[in-house]
Length: 163
Image (cartoon, rainbow, N blue to C red; front, side, top):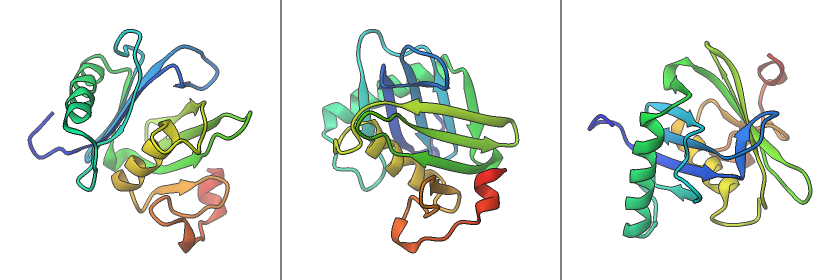
């Protein structure tokens, strides 16, 4: 990872996967790109927000950094920040899966999220926080249209959600 690139979030495990497929997957969110990979660290999982205002423990930060390097080396896709037109996040909850959809110049990519949205350290809160840091002007809650950075501010043009 280039020195000027900052690691915001790393998530890998069986609780995320590309739409309509199973198995485990990994996402790395940095200050300049989003990377996805099927090649997750064997039989493990990790959810960690590693941004500048993170209070993650040093051992967990190191584990996240090692995992991020492995995922980035064997990536399936890479979306540079300036190619991303919109990020739409739907919380998982109860018996319903959530997802994150990346709309980009390279086409749409949807990653499904299972698990409990109420877990403070689960995949949903980690992704929400990292995506809000990555693109505060382009990351939205799919249900409300509010920016992930501040859902209380409301308001998103529905044409962005639809196309």
